[in-house]
Amino acid sequence: MIKKGSRVKVLAGRDKKKEGDVIEIDRPNNRAKVQGINIVKKHVKTTKEKKGGIITKESFIHISNLALIIAKEKIKKTEVKK
Image (tube, rainbow, N blue to C red; front, side, top):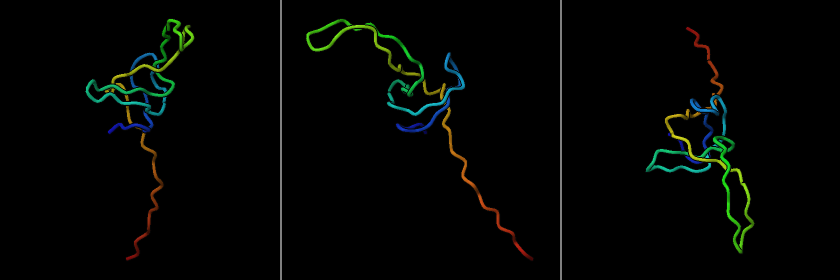
């Protein structure tokens, strides 16, 4: 199960074969936001509080296009003597 903070690999799309950590999950829509993946540019209008301009940020990607990466643990094999 993919959770916030999990390490995932992208299976489809323009960022195919890239890896990243999950930042945010949208469960009702089955989407996740991954750090450094699916970068989009957003045009922000200037307000009294914030300066406008073009900002880049991550956008959501469908969970079906992600694969959970599990770190392989070293398994010690023990010898059984008869």
